[in-house]
Image (cartoon, rainbow, N blue to C red):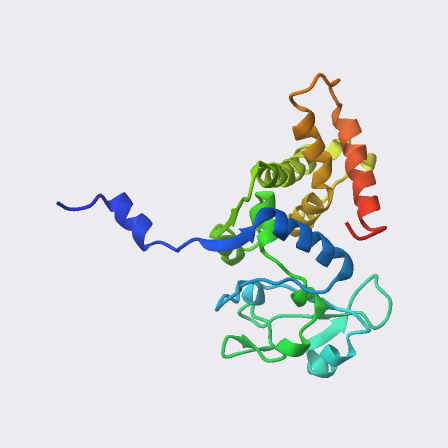
Length: 228
């Protein structure tokens, strides 16, 4: 008997990628945001972020990195102090430091690259700004050790959704709309929404969108004052 086409497609399509236990990932990612000690991502052969027409910010103190990149590939960053530079991409949208689909300066790659973790899009339920990255993020699958982990993931998604849909409720009527910035913010402030999830079954007064927005702002400020 011939199998249905839909079943055949599902069997031949891209396989899921283990993204790790969500609570562990969330904790380590928050620490990485503060300490900038790099993300541990199982990239394998994937170079989607290296071939997606991204400009890479390199700071003045990254002298080892700057020394390994030809000067003609770097240019100043408008609005930032002297010494901050951007690494562009070639006519195909690829980082010029790629060689044979591998980073030629991997041990000295920019902090921007070290800290990049495309799983933030998966965690926040957000479509990335590049199709190739979105294809990758759709394959990541987190696992959950308990209900608390599931609630944490739901809170990150709720945070992203709220910021995206209620920008007018924020001071000045503005909120991040760049997918990467939005996903990162959602990870930082998700505890605000975790509290709302835990309070949903209790006799609590209704919290206005403006109140929630102010809580998000305060949570983001508090995040940067100390290690979560």
